[in-house]
Amino acid sequence: MSILLTRKITLIALLAALSIVGRIYMAPIPNVQPSTVIIIITGLVFGARFGLTLALLTSIGSDFILGFGFFTLMQVIAWGAIGLISGFLARFRTRIPIVVMACYAGLCGYLFGFLVSLNMLIGGVPSFIAYWIMGLPFDSYHAIGNFIFYIILSPILIKLLENERKKLAVKRSE
Image (cartoon, rainbow, N blue to C red):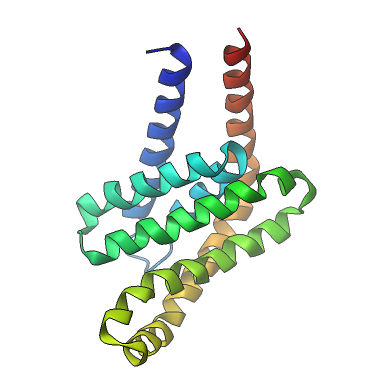
């Protein structure tokens, strides 16, 4: 195994651990956790594949403690979509002000809630609509938490991850 691959695996493992621990630690506050923002930032710096991988590891890893259900698959889909969208936004990240990105992170809280609620379509459209509307206050907690976490974490985490990305690029060229 090359050093480059080992470094990437270690990085994704550390980010997953940070995301999982953050989610578990914040579990007493409904829907407020740093995981979504960590996935967003990872997708912004390393691209869609990294964001998607982190989404999968966060969902499965944290649900070992918080409990599994059909919602785990929906979390993978929701966080995966957020990781993919963030990866596509990567090329524009430096031109978008932090407050606009924080608003995007907040909107991702609502997107996450909507996508996770889709599992209720199994009971029909009225069940989905009722479930989704009942969840909007919790989606708002998620959105507000994401906004705040993005403002706090992004300057630090983006800088750290950019430095790591540069190291990976140097190792690749050696």
